[in-house]
Image (cartoon, rainbow, N blue to C red; front, side):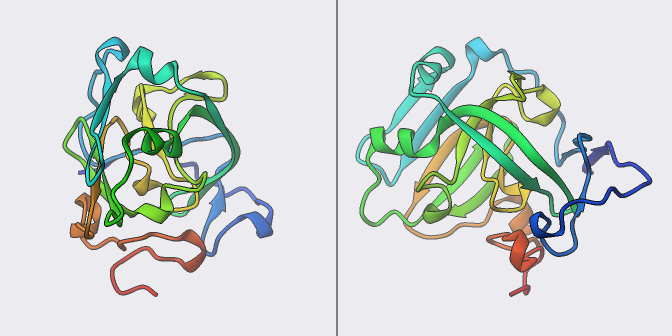
Length: 203
């Protein structure tokens, strides 16, 4: 069962123009939601692999990933359970940098993000390119906490947060879509908060 922590009884008022339909501003409280037990991952042993429909598969260690050009995201995040956090700051490396080093094949259309726990989530390739997705290891200037996916999680802030896989260890490029964990269990294949794509059958 999912682990949930951090919900308060009162809902704060956020800026309506920043909140997708059905969302509320949780302030600086970041709820903890997971579909699996939290792993213990030594950053020095963590690696990220990008493979599948690419010209050359590659794996980066913690130090090698940190040696890549860094990138920062400052903005909002939204969870399908209706909370949003505004003005968050994450730092890591953008997915474009990794893909530029492996060379996606022309027939690559989707990505399946894999976590070290076995969790997966599927995304159109267009949703993780063009400066729209990151692998992040810092939140608000501090190392990303394990309960929030540290040492490294995927960050795809324009989609509901189950798409931002915690404890990410692999990005598998695919030539056709393949559902991940929550998608097989009834969640929407894409998950756009502004369209309220929460469940299969939503627009």
